[in-house]
Length: 107
Image 1 (tube, rainbow, N blue to C red):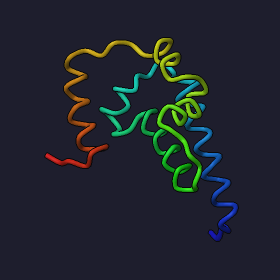
Image 2: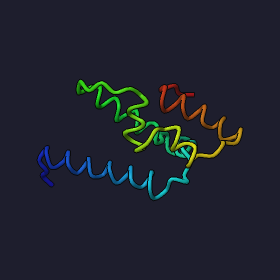
Image 3: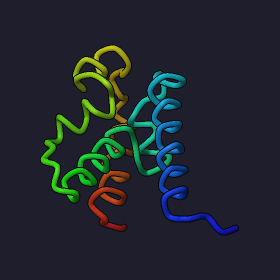
Image 4: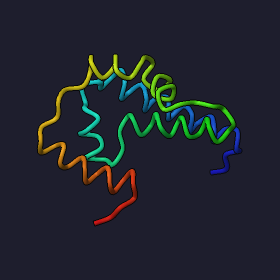
């Protein structure tokens, strides 16, 4: 299959928008900690990657601005309406997943 660069970028952008819709609108009950523990990334990672992409292109964007762009509202508002407190077990799993997937530390 031969896809030009512009079309590939458009397809990737469409897939990203669909993933965002799925996580934000279709499945908001899925907890970020569960995503991180199972998949090694969560909505906060996606918002950080969005922010980093903006910064790489010379667009100044803070962590909070990136989160608001991804979540469609201030993060604290979304967290209050969609996230629950995590059990100590899930928090312990998260510490391992965070170190491995965000900080790049293995074992």
